[in-house]
Length: 299
Image (cartoon, rainbow, N blue to C red; front, side):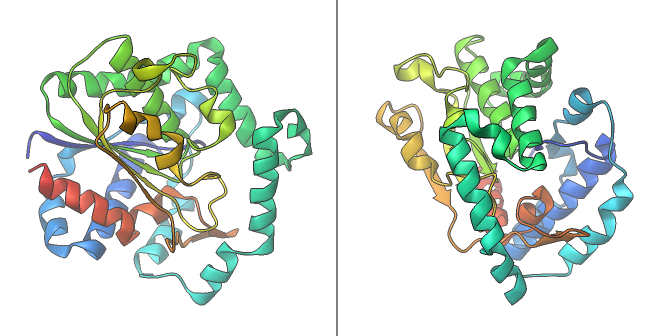
């Protein structure tokens, strides 16, 4: 078990202090595995030291979130085992469809960004800051992940790298740099949840985008599973197996799977249903099944 490692790269926004955030993520991850494969969860729950959090958010935002804001909502999430009828309706509501439509338009016509509501503009601005590497911030963030990955890759350990939202972009770019700049050996398995990697805007700014052939992509991913929930507008284009199909043709990856039909993220907070939160993804048995299968296969 010492050679099995689950590494989580969170999405944007300030997070609780790293130790507290790590505990919440582990709690929901183990619960998701338990909902899919109870016996695997019993084993996994004994190996918290094999779970690492890449706590990049304080470096980016210089502030932390009060954990007490999330605790009651996570408790409620742990006690809910499936989406309610209202959750299903809300996930496909008119306002979410409108948000998706607006995102899709801006994704192809970014000069119209000013038409987006304030929170959407803020999200776009944070992505832009990352891609422009202002004050070397993107390089510093990726270095946090590299410090964990380098020794594991060199040792040829089994690694499941989970990237949520913007964290999936950070993970992808890091893997590209380790592939082509540092040329490290070894492979990882990649799980993306609520990821914007399918967006036109994002794909044109990823590491390797200016190259062709194998140099365009990370060559250190063995299998890639992408999961997106109904109503998650951040996962604008939810099918990655077509966007990254050349990786299969070049035989630098064994498989790319998309799981995006009938999957619901039913995390709630004071604002109502949030189809994007990492905790809601992790407790979902669809995510738990992927983690459980990986844990068993890599043992």
